[in-house]
Length: 164
Image 1 (cartoon, rainbow, N blue to C red):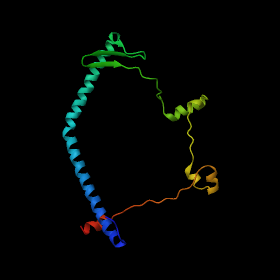
Image 2: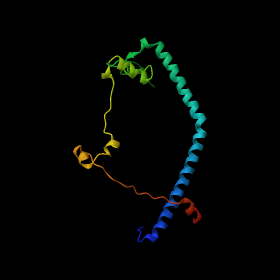
Image 3: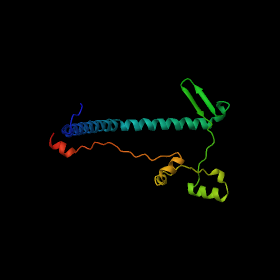
Image 4: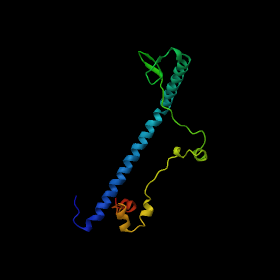
């Protein structure tokens, strides 16, 4: 449809509002059905997840007790047992850092120990401050202000419902 004059705009806004309300109703109905399906399967899914957790624990306990009988996995390390139905393995992971105390305490301890190379600082332009600068200064630092606008359609759903 193409609008020819302002007299047609209210009708188009009304139709758009009706279509949006219909979409909301469909999405609500769909979500109710999805929730019902999830609820129907929730107990069975939880039981299957519990079974998987159980089997993982059984296999891990066995593997830990028989670690010496497992085959080295590769040059990177780790151990593996392969069979017809799959494998169990201890994979070597790269070292990682885990904070024992809160980040604030770690930061304070790093500063106190003068380990500032272990502290990362992020630098970025402050857009709020840049907004206050004149155009010449902004141009000199390769920045410009961009005035913008956003188009929006705001149907009055109550009024649409009265005339539906």
